[in-house]
Image 1: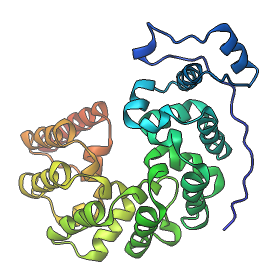
Image 2: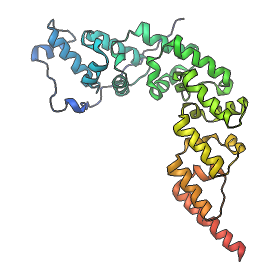
Image 3: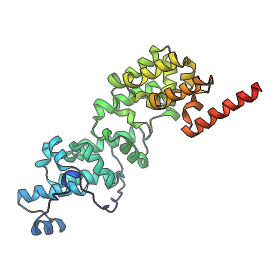
Image 4: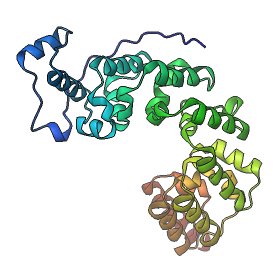
Length: 301
């Protein structure tokens, strides 16, 4: 399958900010090497070539020490390999400042082969996941890990599972939900689905909840979903019907929002619909709480 590429020139380089480990000892090329680099040529001295690569990483705001620790192949790779990676990602609209952040997160990308490693991922996103070309940068920037995932072993099986689960038609995977593609079906997606079913929800109900709130499939069962579900069903005496209507409940902090707001309502003997209780700001919540208390006083009067 052939990708029709449209060249998007890289933006002008921003003012560079060196990584902290290098701010006090900035590498400097000798005048001859600097002139060669500026002219687009390279020197035959291996030490100077290595320094040239380190300076290139600095220009991207990538930590060279981290790059060497996590990708030893970087030491021997020619500078042209690094530039080929930048050129490939820039052609798909990844801006240079973001490129540096991605390469710092995943140094293995520095020595990747665009033809074997990167273009297949973009081909998959375009022609199988059907992400429109202008949305590709959003998919990558929301989840850079997608660039280091195997199409055959990870992305394609995840897409097939998600489509079978209900992410089709107007609910199809988009640049906003493509981060789900990096999730292991067996170790990440299925445990969330099975936990929600263990609460008493059927497969169709869980599917509709996940489509309304895709973040459900990325949450930790033990650290997030289970304690929130137990608090809602036991302490708040909520119902599964409420969770089905408002699955976004699981995205709110239990300690910073759910528990304290429930406690304030309970102290005053008041109730509030779950979405109204959680979606509004702290100030608005306080205002509504006061308003509800005043209305109750007026009703008694």
